[in-house]
Amino acid sequence: MNQMQEFDNVKAHLEDIGQSHILQFQDKINPEQGLSLLNQVKNLDFSRIPTWVEKYVLNDGSLKVPEHFDPAPSWPPVPKTAEQAEKYAKAVQIGENLIRQGKVAGFVVAGGQGTRLGFDGPKGNYPISPIKKKTLFRIFAENLLAASKKYGTTIPFYIMTSPLNHNATVEIFESADYYGLGKENVVIFQQGTLPNFGFNGKILLADKHKIATSPDGHGGSLKALYQSGAVADMKKRGVRYLSYWQVDNPLIHPIDPLFVGLHVADNAEMSSKALLKTGPLEKVGNFCLVDGKVTVIEYSDLPDEAAHRKTEDGSLAFELGSIGIHIISVSFIEKLNADGDFALPFHRAVKKIPHIDKNGNAIEPDEPNGIKLETFVFDAIPMAAHSIILQTRREEEFAPVKNAAGVDSAEVTHQMMIDRAADWLEKAGITVPRKPDDTPDCTLEIAPSFALTADDVKPKTDEIPELTPGCIIYLE
Image 1 (cartoon, helix red, strand yellow):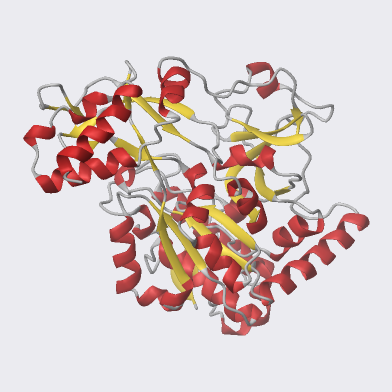
Image 2 (image 1 turned 45 degrees about the vertical axis):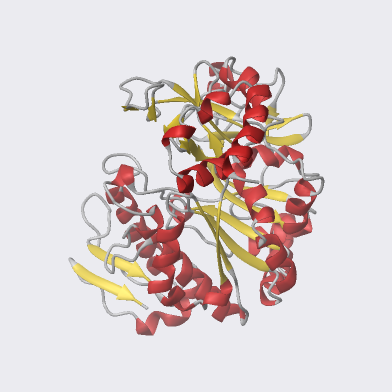
């Protein structure tokens, strides 16, 4: 079949769903561009696009807040009772055994660029550590390498990219010799994309031979893991549990025996870590219980009354914030993809989308002109047969670097990394000089090879030099 016949074939399908304009420039593109456009069209989900247009583009069919919901239960960061202490000790033992057996892997969603940080390239390549300026990717890899050594195993690293940064990410890992993990233990794959729509429901064109698309959100990871062959790779290795986190958080504990152990001990399929919110309107998702299922309600969707509701002790009723840290059972990912029709609900975003007009002229809109659809991984939590939440401390495990200045900026993240290092040293009995405002009067960085947790510091106190005001100390 020649290219013209193929165009005729797909045109009929596009006409059926009201999107035949995608081929309006077919006589103005060369054969190579024509082949590219044909492949893009063939990858469109013809059966679902009319529903998407009607539900999410012409109308806002995003998930609605349920009428009835309650605060979700959680496990505290440290046990509060003898019974909890016993459970935690058993959970740590379970988690450590599973890690040693090679049944736990790391998984980071890393499709974003460093644009908001004023950085050109994948966000994972952004230098963030206070002294050595290690990149996010390097910090994560060193964590997995140190955990592999600590537990006498090999922990594979799965990385989801986007079409925008996939090749660059592969090149980064190749040039760094995979940070010592071994090429065979690093699996890099792409997330899916979705077409962008104008307000009239028509798919926008980025060029005469190119459909305007955007990544399908971190929720797309659960499908991409399966479709890319990553899950098959896990099965071959014997990996049963996936530690999930997002690329902007250098304080993450990628391999946490307690979290893994609680997940397994409570027969959970997808579990989460949570923070106590700084206030009722903090811009994080809210963990709730809906019909007995753990559910995340976005901060922008939580009714004001619920956001400000207090308990008898004066704390927020909905105090648990979602921070994108999960343990996901591989069997759960398989179950979601079993019938080949798995799809999370879409979230609708009104955006400024560059495109070409009907005359082929490039348009850079000054105002929002269309709809992008994306999925969020936390929408899979209610699909799990059981789910648990483990609270963690913000200063211990959550310092996202998102902005060039202000809140969640590199400056804030640097300070939080120094603060955590100081806290670990003080817990081991080391005196840390402090300024009048109680912040450390020194610059500290602890490599994962030196310590993965505060407890790892205690046996190494004789390797730590005396800290003096203004000193710069790197421990590895």
